[in-house]
Length: 143
Image (tube, rainbow, N blue to C red; front, top):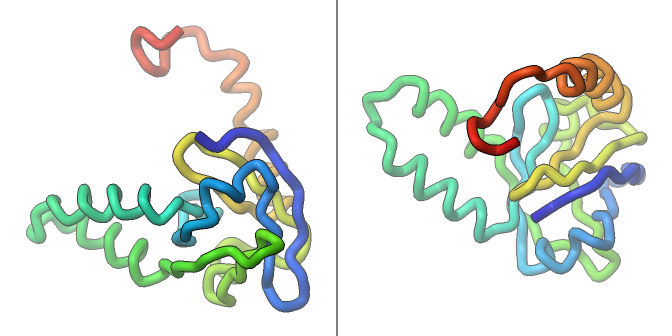
């Protein structure tokens, strides 16, 4: 499980140092792909394999499944972090997420998300009030 918020920077080669607490689980290999709200999703390779299997079971006649799969897999990049815990984010993914230098890396349960710092701060500002004011169960039986 990935938790927390971290603020690494991209270097001039498009590399990002993964937070130390995420490195062990990601060290065998990971997949970076396009996520919703213009962030990047980083999955451990084993978790991405589970997602792949689930999408494989969707009928090829389901247009939404085809569209989602195409965007997700076409933009995906697999990688093994180096000894310093760095990963290289391909230019196409950096452009998609508007990543330049200041980044935010968040733990999001089974995945890590990489955000442009400004985009994350705006997203969080827009969503925190709604989170604090939820008056009914978002997930029945959870709270």
